[in-house]
Image (cartoon, rainbow, N blue to C red):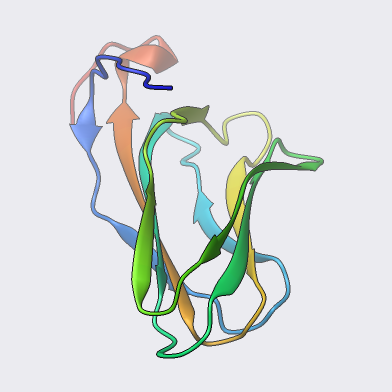
Length: 125
């Protein structure tokens, strides 16, 4: 399935997190100043010999929800770009979290777009 959408806003710098433990780890926290649309998540397995199971969750302010699970082959990267998420922390802190089956081998990079107009201000930086 392919999803195509036009996203207004300003592309933000990438946010990269090494999953240092096998516990659920915050990899992205939405701004409390504007809506952020997550347009891509890159999940890289740096292990040279083992595939690693990775799970991505989005947090709505009170609960975690699994939205992606995949075993990432050794020395490879998976790009999640067909599930755009619109997140904001104005009312409740919304996040993306990740877990990996092996510590210190998986990095998660989140690319988002700041959508100032979606907050009702219509302003620019």
